[in-house]
Length: 319
Image 1 (cartoon, rainbow, N blue to C red):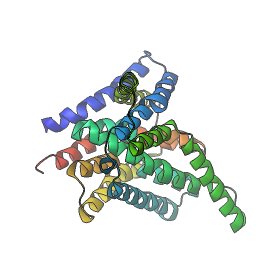
Image 2 (image 1 turned 180 degrees about the horizontal axis):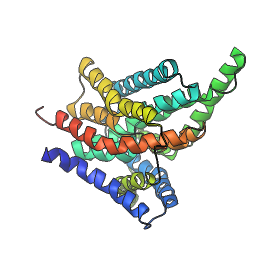
Image 3 (image 1 turned 90 degrees about the vertical axis):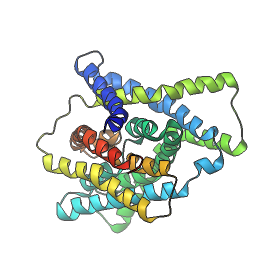
Image 4 (image 1 turned 135 degrees about the horizontal axis):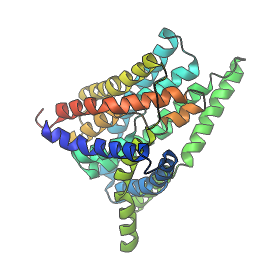
């Protein structure tokens, strides 16, 4: 068990440090947005560029990984939406927000550091790049389009127009994402077999190396000031879906589909098991559900210390 804790403890110590530094006034919560912008706009693009540009094509293109991650996440998202809508009687926008909370992990801020420590930074960076493609081009646009369909009722054509507009807006936001730019540039260098000049390569490497620690501090600092506000049932449902159902479905797909290298198998299951993405409350705010999203994110992050340690113990070598 000690070898498992040696992987997870640094992750949660940095999250706790970010929480304490913000709670005790060393940083303001608004400062976390500045740090987060640095990570998203500079550190992550540099990391993703390095992950792709410095490898061979057969190391990066992994359709099986993408298929497992996409199918497992969509199964969980649809199941969460249907349960919230049909069983719990929630509105469509709230159901979509709950489904998104079950299926969209924090693959960058928590997933990558955890995978990097569990199976190595090289595999972790490739897995992160593939996960970001799935999340930004499929999961998030679909969830936001479903949430946007809960506007005032009208004709069928009007509902389809709202769906299409929401999808286009989501994809437009994705295209402007600096992380997507880092991915695209990395793929370009990979396809053309280009290499950066040594001084520039080192500068990009320094940016990439700063990613993990700052990202985890941002996660901790962003959790301050959140409360549950009497919504335990919905929070618990989202938490169970994210921490248990999502990794279980992905694990089952890994077991029944053709095999991947063990490191990639571990990476895809670990990514599915981490808490919600950092912008989850921000996306939910558009539909008035940011309070629920923030509370679910806080509860899931705290409980994930137990579930992730258990998962890594199960996935340890020789298990």
